[in-house]
Picture: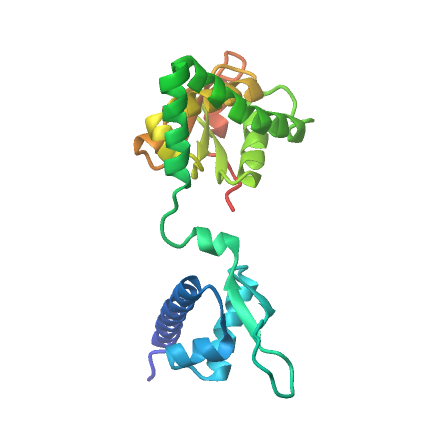
Length: 250
């Protein structure tokens, strides 16, 4: 008698292997586009030894994911009949994921310059100015969230996720937590904690209560975690809500 339970597992293993192979091929395409600045499907196919149908399948997937874009081939050579060849290029988002960039180094150098020539207070002033626009956007988006700190934390998590911080708010036994799984300035904040301090102050003002930073990505932690202490009015409710989590990561 056939063991039918093995069939789905085998299919799953085959799908996994195919997915891994596809991922490696698309990584190669991305690297080629990064090195060449752009290439036609035919050029990519020849470089990778793929058929026209094979390279088209991968390019269609990269287009759907927003990793590549298309433009008409610009060439001074005369062309024959038919549609002009299309050139595939990496999008800005895909390019940022490739390799390292000097943006963090430039930002750190600029803050060092400010610290040397204007003092630590100027760095703090700069950090506060940087997060002021974020605070305004969050406050506008949180209208209608009410006065409850935990409800406001949930609303703030949703806004921060839209800003790219991949945040979630969780109710725990001692109050609540706001977690940010991404920090766009982590490398700079590792040297200049004023950025984290200014952001924590913004979180406190937006939630409407004192908060405490327990961990930051800038200091080597996996997540930026902000604790929201339970007030006397919420102390009796935290036990029933301690396992509830509002996840808003994208």
